Amino acid sequence: METLAAVLEETGGPLTFRTLTLDDPAPGEVAVKIAATGVCASDAHTISGRIPSPLPAVLGHEGAGVVTAVGAGVAHVAAGDHVALSWLPSCGRCRYCQAGRPVLCAASAPALLGGTLLDGTVRLHDGGRDVYHYSFLSTFAEHTVVPAASAIKIPDSVPLPVAALAGCGVLTGYGAVVNRARVAPGDAVLVYGAGGVGLSAIMAAKLSGADHIVVVEPHPGKRDGATVFGATRVLSPDDNVVAEVRALTGGQGADVTIDAVGKEGLLEQAFDATAPGGTVVCVGVPAATAYASVPAARFVREEKYLTGSLYGSSRPTQDIPKLLNLFHTGKLPIDKLISKTYAFGEINTAFADLTGGSNRRGVVIVDEELAGR
Image 1 (cartoon, rainbow, N blue to C red):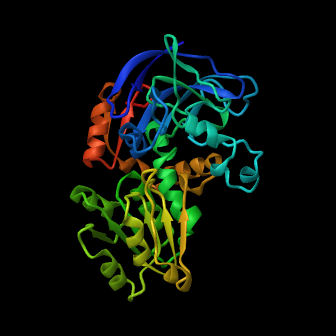
Image 2: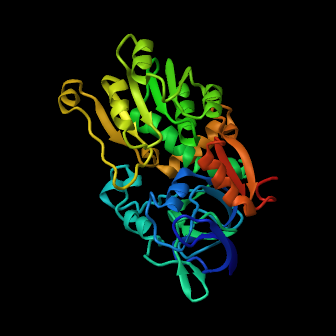
Image 3: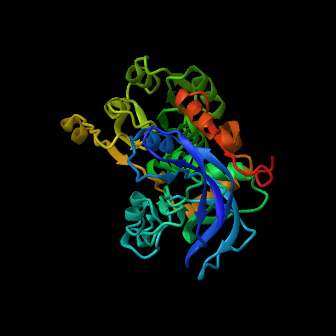
């Protein structure tokens, strides 16, 4: 079939609309009509070249839509089902999947970086040339084909723009707090960044019963918005962050620090702002050439935990429905993250707004009817 897609031809963008040929789903794959897709910083980093990706490619990894067809062997979804999309499918067989850590799936990693589906091939074509996938999903298109494990059935009552955000940004921030850091009642939590991932971490910290939730954010508008989601103190990077956090915590520092930015040099400050025995969770992805260092003697003597968290250290097939249930019961206001929506043809404007820092989360409405607009 043919599908309209926004294609990244070369590093630096812009995205160019082209009509591509999309193959039918192979065995173990699902075809989806996209309703809405989030505009994520990871996509922006790929456009800029900070995150390498083979090109040309159809980006987008935060989406939701309706199943149009399934390949052989797919039984958990059928045509007409509403699905949220997970950009990290898991094989269920490797050592990491067996250990309950599917985001480290050994079968997914090579294809993820290679811009293909799980079998090492692509379903998108532009005349005689292949077009690469992005994180298995390529949601910047009217239609896509994804691995079956990426299509997670959700209730029809869930707004698809909300479901799209649950598939990446919300799960990443929420999971870093709940799954990786295991924030407990009474904890002091420090969050760097008040974008979609940072705000999701704030919401999760509040749900977990944190007493102090301190947010560091350079954009004034985002600082103001952070309090709506549960921040108890908001700082600028120009403030003396370490001193402020220690003053709030009796001189000790944060029990948990979440770096949702990935800016080079930030980890060192995060380490200083975290209490002995505390945990620093790195969520934002730095440039591939970036390195960080911490004082080795203090690392030992203060018994701090320094850990990464990919995709919220989650089990997407279980955690995405859980997040959407929390939204349904009013405990997780995912819909408030959406500060602006865009028509599909405005996708480059959405990226300009993202890099300009004006949005909490922008959502592109690919199909207005499916998205309930």
